[in-house]
Length: 79
Image (cartoon, rainbow, N blue to C red; front, side, top):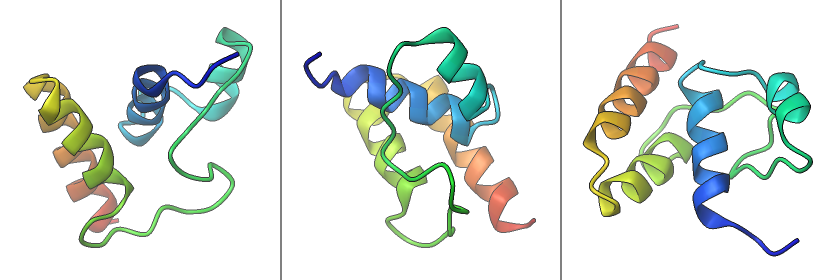
């Protein structure tokens, strides 16, 4: 199967925002591709995975997802 950037970013978004877990995505999809390693904690910092996914959805003008990712990053930073 060829790499699908949109699906990768969408699956990453779903995990980062807490909408789904990695195991839930594995049940739903034959393949799960993420922009981060789901077995390791995501470290919140400048230009991190949250920002990468947010920039992607910004380029697609999907500002609702951008806002959700922003708030997920704020929540992770304060945890």
